[in-house]
Image (tube, rainbow over all chains, first blue to last red; front, top):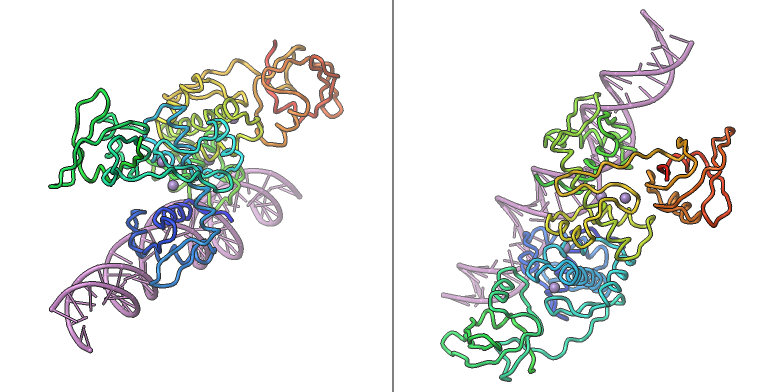
Length: 219
Length: 219
DNA sequence: TTTATTATTTAGATTTGTCTAAATAATATT
DNA sequence: AATATTATTTAGACAAATCTAAATAATAAA
Ligand SMILES: [Mn+2]
Ligand SMILES: [Mn+2]
Ligand SMILES: [Mn+2]
Ligand SMILES: [Mn+2]
């Protein structure tokens, strides 16, 4: 089945909001896609018709297995293009999401399999997210927690859950990237901010919001 | 001004059919875009409104200088992606046009300038067509003629004017590519076919239609 | 358990890009 | 010059994707 660009964006967003099994609400999807709830309802009917989602009025949306397959293909294309932009064209991680948002809609199995080979068949993208293979299988991410909930002291950054330019630019300014090792110095109860130290850098304090979006594992 | 994908395809096709200065007819454009004349008339009104073409009822279409600028940008993107597909992903020249037809619509100055750098700022694409630079300037192609009109005996292939998979696959089968040197053995008046010989290959006879689409210059 | 609030859907429009069929203009033929 | 043919445009329709405003359902608060 051949999806339009709009349909692909819906399917991808539903996958993202589902996080495994949860039901996706009309409002949440409208917010994610920066559109209006009425538009989501319209599209939900179409996607149901195409058997990509399960949907009953007022009951929310979930992907069918066919829909999930579609989503994983789109995500694969998105993340491979992100790798290309960073590895080959020297873009930095906050610039690539928007571009990949468009490149992901060029549908060609052959193009993507060649691109993957060319990049050395990477399994994680520049934000630390796993890349599905041609069959839709993803490397199960190694156990990781958000920085605000980590209890070990010495940690390594494994992913970033918010790909907004604002957060990524902030992390650039603080020299935090994937693989960066850091040490937790203190938790401040008052605002849940966290003091951390990177090698060769003075200690800095980051807000709870930032900490929630940095994924880490014990080094 | 931001063009839709459909508008970009129209502008590019108009540029192609204009060949410098000629007026483009409604029918010719409909044929080129595989659409209907009525659709072309509708779009012509929109493009005129956006000042990308000069158009008066029944008088045909020409690009304004703004339209030409747009066309050259799209062509630049198209041809750079073609280079990428051949040079980096090892596609062959008959597979790339369709893919570039989609990739060309990802609009990002920065992406294209990085891609161009990455490819070594090529000035001709895999079909021998010149690539406009960021300002829209193209290397004036070295004087070349179609094989059926060449009068020198020893020639080198410089471009192919028809990018159809059918022709390109034929040329592959006959080991003819850009840079291939060949010798004209005979012209046959009856059907205007031409006998040619490539080094290390037996002589072959090619039809007038093929010869018309192979561009050459004296070696 | 009513009532108020929030979430979702429907009704009806709009924009973009396309189409078919019919009308009109331009060009070619007799 | 009249007629036939071809090219182009118009009229009216349609599908996709979106929107606003109004109606309805679900949920929370009183
Ligand atoms: Mn997208
Ligand atoms: Mn990513
Ligand atoms: Mn195109
Ligand atoms: Mn080309």
